[in-house]
Image 1 (cartoon, rainbow, N blue to C red):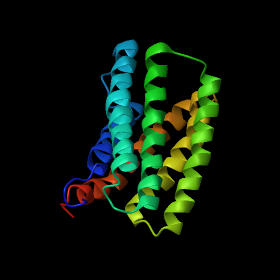
Image 2 (image 1 turned 120 degrees about the vertical axis):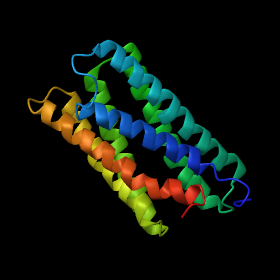
Image 3 (image 1 turned 120 degrees about the horizontal axis):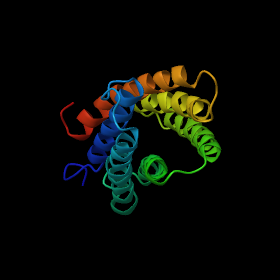
Image 4 (image 1 turned 90 degrees about the horizontal axis):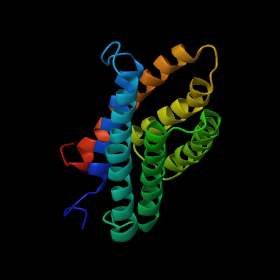
Length: 184
């Protein structure tokens, strides 16, 4: 069935699109003096559709269809995609509806903890370096996000660092996308 389809392609594409959009904005490559409410809403839509829906779709395919014909790996990858899909839906809803930044900081710390578990499992199953690198960068990002969101005095610099890490996550994920598309 692997030769027939690989749902990882849409999930990884969604991840790359989302982290690059957020990263570029965090680095200040958006429109200067733009309407921050509109920018936040636009980022929310990207997060919900590309980051969230695309990765949740991939997770469901991995859980239900087991296209890689390895139940343990499908469950692991499905859980990884579902976690970050739901992560991006949560971030998107926060950008649209608002909420408590302290609670979001706790959420990011929890995702950091989960990602450490995903990294450990990636090493246990012998996953390729692109997946390990992307996950390790997500650990860095989610370790920094609580401080960037919770109003630490160095938050503007931390936001820029988070933007750079988002870009690096996308770069690390490109080989995963190429593999899923059978280009590499």
